[in-house]
Length: 147
Image (cartoon, rainbow, N blue to C red; front, side):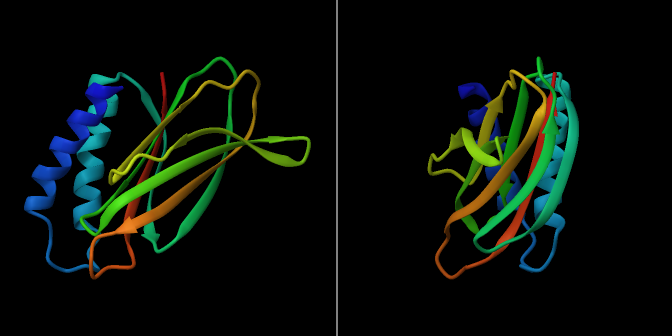
């Protein structure tokens, strides 16, 4: 897992140094996404089952049915405006959401792995924990992949 983080941080630094000056452009976040897609498919040898881009000011949620006996890698990443982005993953159990994983480090990329014991509905919260000075919104990307 540490190797993934190191790769991501190096890739982000390279991309951010040439990032678009227009804060409304999706080009920087899709460029980061392209690097991550290649890494996930080529190096981790995982199949991407969901790819999402959007704008984020506080928290966004998405749900997905995850199958048992698979290990899912869930990655959220922010553009150059983010200092810290986090993920919390919940499983629906008896009508309530129960936390099953979280990434709360202080990076502009978050990664959680989930290995469901049974198929079910999962909720993924992407949280804009901290922006760089002068920003209160940014673009994020989300990748969900499994082996």
